[in-house]
Length: 585
Image (cartoon, rainbow, N blue to C red; front, side, top):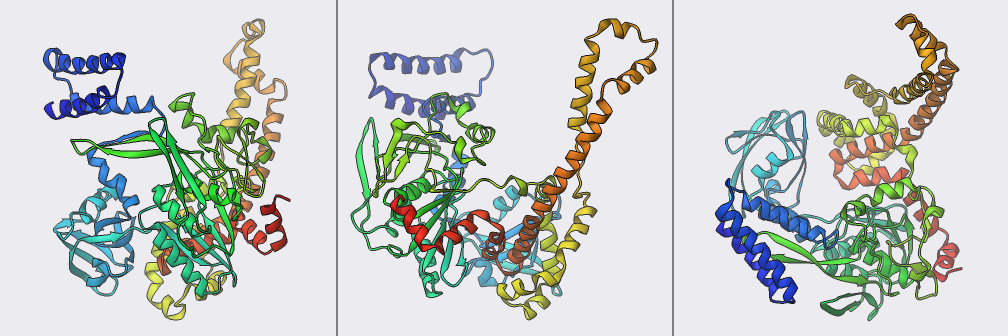
């Protein structure tokens, strides 16, 4: 209780120190309530829990992005942005209640002692690591820990039996770049997952590697990148723009305007540039795409971004918890703030994706409406808008046909990973002798016949292409029942339940309507299945490539059917069109 009251006192006295008289009364009222609950409440109240819930509720009243992080969650919340974790350095997959090693991090403890892809972890120290209790949380709890602590790992290796390794936990780099590779002889591709502390260094290394392979044009993928450190975004934009250009400025009612500008010579200031965005591209990613668009440095392709233009500052609390408080808004070079409205409250704000979908925005560019009062212009005079994300220069609708029920069930039941992992473990050694590189694998993929094997495997797991849904049949029958019940005279005329049921079946055109609708649904489902077939094969190919050659090659395989990437490649091969877009013609 004392610890909780100290936390509340710090919070409230901090507010009191800067508040007017009415606000002092409010904070004193809260302190008095806490004292009353502690001294007089009939039962023992969980004051700590009440305090945390109270803080969360207060922050939600401010804006959607101010947040409270409990002490136990602070480390896991910060790890993805800090760029490292403390562990042994493996990528793993849990399949059939077993931890399978997929890859080992270079120069990490796992590589140093000789753990290999394909090993199965069966013990951590003296605790059995097999069974239905093995979850992601279990693995993180047992493999991660404090720096320089010891851990004993027992693995089962094909043809070798059990092997015991003694490891010392170390800092493991947590890469923010998913992958980079050459799409063809001139076009390079980089995918950035988040803006972490080391993202700019990772980006420069990726660009330099691609330049050595002959890259002349770059596709930078920020789809599903939810942001991260503002400073990292500044450094990456600095790689695209020449010196002393405004990247972004931040300003709040209690925070003075602060400008971030380019300072150094970048690794990609001249080459053609396309940035990919979607509805999950947010915050620092929007600074990057927005600054590039405002300076007409590159073309944005995809869908409208999330619309997060608020800056949070972390405040550490006495008990080890953390408050991330919005302190300012950020404005990109044209002067626009891309923060979408949140005046209707938190619950409505988080429904934005649902609302976009219902308004057909994800599939139809014309359904997107901007307020003329929020109109701005780029350096070349192109019209852009604030108040709701960054609108791409080239809109690519969401491919709804890829998400057939069959494809969704295959993914949700983890069958791609399960099948690919099993196949790779059975064939890894011999296969790598014949096909040591991904390019070798790519050439023989069609001859492997894995799609047919995979479909049989899926059927054994009770997942079939044709999935019958009965909801619409029930709706038709229900509508006919409602109509029948409107006529009370006719209902009273029935002599038996059988008579009533027979009359319903014969009533109107119910059976004909159901049969006609059934034919339409069969045709539609076949179209979905056929359309999603290429995505199913690409995902399967990527999953096998991931376990055989590394995570980088999963992305290389699936991009072959990525319509947004196809549009980017097409544009970069049409120099006249590329330049015309940037000039606003």
